[in-house]
Image 1 (cartoon, rainbow, N blue to C red):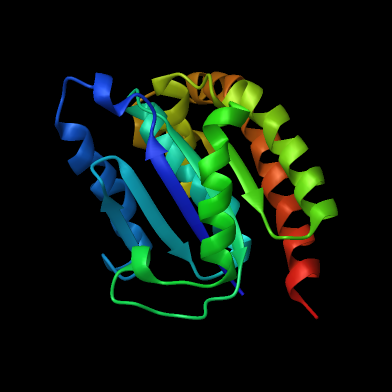
Image 2: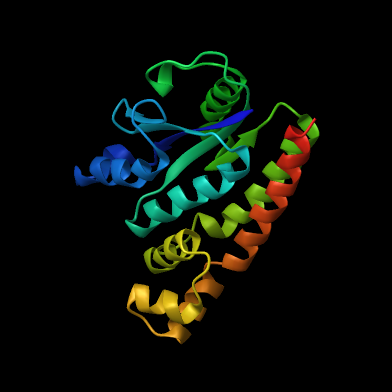
Length: 204
């Protein structure tokens, strides 16, 4: 079982700066080689394979945090399933994970949600997507400073508030405020819950 994130940049045509495409590529580069593991295509769309499904939600949240930090955002669908065909380009690979991700992505605009997931297990999907929609009530409103904190905290899970503050050039009290406003503890709880649920789903 693998997982695939399909996304596009919200309001990309309104962006005056052309830098954001390079910014997006920089954000995606830690996820592996392009175009086999991730790819930016049609200007503002992207696809990434996250081979460990348990990492999928955290990866999507990290991408969203990176984008919110530069005052952008993305719509993203996470699909779970098998991979039946491995092409040189991820956009040409196929399998259940790709179909789930692609089909779900086409519905996001109409649903007016920026993040959703599909495994094909109706009970799992309904439960997790309801949780995601509740989380998006604050995630879609992250300010740049809060998003910067999130990136640092997600990428450095062992650092204390004080150490994160040194990284961000702010004091510990400011770190604490950003952590609270970004609802970071809730984000971590959601990720932990998702991991336990997806593990049950992929362990026969």
